[in-house]
Image (cartoon, rainbow, N blue to C red; front, top):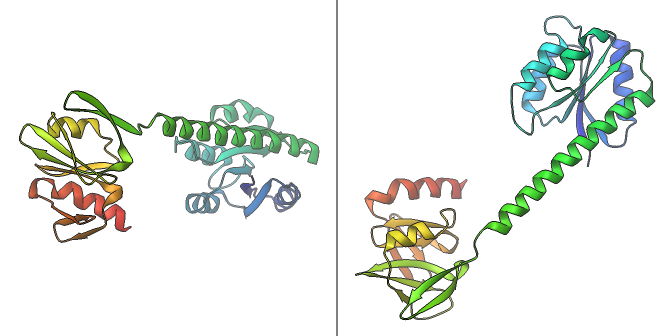
Length: 248
């Protein structure tokens, strides 16, 4: 993993040193260097920047003011800060904006590397937490449901359901693996609440379709295999919203 970085300092020699240290560090990727914090902010807003090494005392917009703007994003992907400054009195303010570290000029490459390593560990932990969270969500997602069919409960895999059709006091669950539907004593509304909303959508008072198994759409008609299902006016808006995401 490499961290995209920017260097920000209005002093040319300090900016040159900061850039040099970033470039010689294997896990850092320097994608921008700026002598002006306003220009740096515009670049950060337009690019994926994990880490900003920057001075505090700068004209127009100080490093601390820039840090407050970045901290205001309040999301897990916001740019993190490491200050590199000659003024130790700003250290407490630096922690208030959740700066990852505070380099006091003049600093050595060893000092810089210690701060950069701390940042790398932070982002590595963030990536691990996000991965574990995604895995946990995926593991919790249901893969099947049980339906009452005649006098027994039948296990039905969600990926096998093509569409569900209302039939008097029952529903017909049309499966991809079987020629004949399952007939279950329940309502279409109950099925709508039971099936995951990211995989199934009600498109008619009498039909719920599996979004993954839609083969084509023509005007207000959905085709799933050889079956054609109409989208009624009451459900058209929600289906068109799904289609707009699908086409993008």
